[in-house]
Length: 265
Image (cartoon, rainbow, N blue to C red; front, side):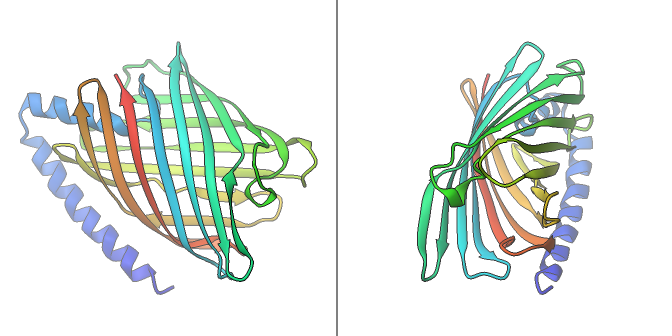
C-alpha cells in the first residue's frame, strides 16, 4: 500500500522522540516530573474525574466507494464510587456522489466499568456491562437493534513518560427489527510525554464485524497538547490515520481523528 512508507517514517520519528523524552525525564526536577505526571493523566480513561469529550473522525476516503463520512462523538464520563460510567452519542454525515447526503444522530451507547484496582494505582483495570440503543435518526446511521455487551479498560501509567493500555468493547443484538449484529472494537493506546503538556501517541479504533467477517485496523500518529486552566484540564489533539489492514467495502482508507477532551477536577 502506498501509505505504508509514510506510516513507517512516522513510527521512526516517534521512536526518536520517545528516546529524547525518556532522557529528558530522567534529568527533570522532581516538581516538574510531578507536573508532567498530572498532565499525563489527561489521557487516562479511568481517571477519577468527570470528563466531557468532543471527538471527530473525518473519513475522506472509503474502500471501494466514492462516499465520504464524518462522525462527531459526544462522550460524557463520570466516576460513581468505583464505577466509571461513560455515555457516547454520535452525530454522523455520509455523502454519496449522485445519491446525496444523510446527516443525523446515530446509536447511543453507555457502559459502566467497575474499577478492580485502587484509584491511585499506576496500573488500573475496569470491566462492566454495555448497552447500545437504536436512537439513529436515519436508517443509514444506525443498526435499528438493541444491543448488550461488555467493556474492559486497562491503563498503565507506571512511567511518567510512557503510558499505554487499551479499551475493548463487544456487543450483540438482543432485540429490534434490524439484522443480527455482533461486533467488537479494540482501541489500543500509547502516549509519550515530551514535557510541558506536549505529547505524542496513538489511539486507533480497530473494528471487527463478527457477523460478516469485515474488519478495519487503522494506525496513525497523534500530536497533542494538555493545558490546565483553573479546575479544568484541556486536551487537544490531531491524529491522522491510515488503514493498514481491512476487509469489506466502506472501511475508511484514510481518516483524521481530532478531539477536545476536558476533565473537571
